[in-house]
Image 1 (cartoon, rainbow, N blue to C red):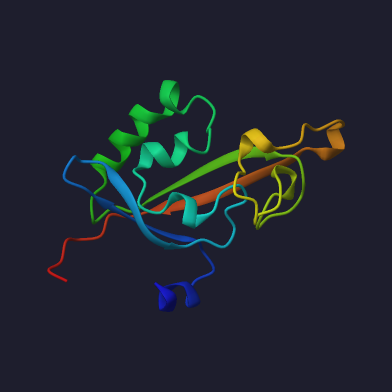
Image 2 (tube, rainbow, N blue to C red; image 1 turned 60 degrees about the vertical axis):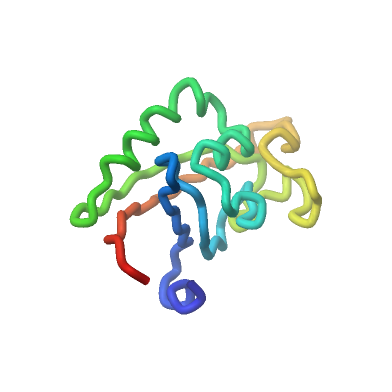
Length: 137
């Protein structure tokens, strides 16, 4: 993981399918997460990663589609997707509007409310997702 992270400017996250068919975060190199810390999400299944982060409407609107998306991934067809959200400061690596990264409890729910339009920043992310072939290693 260290070597891969030194050779790319992208965040890297490794998800492994468990016996129940859930995808679990098993490793990564996350430099620009904005609102979350790898140590808080490591070994959580995809759903818990999003629900512990209070992603708005995850269970109602996103969960089913994301589960199907991961199940349908094939090793020969990487996928690129874009997502976006608003944050109340212009820090890319860590949004300090939710609190200090060293705090035990941080998340969307700890963010300060914007008082003016000048405090709203549009953040867009491009994600590439690829299923790797199974190996014996």
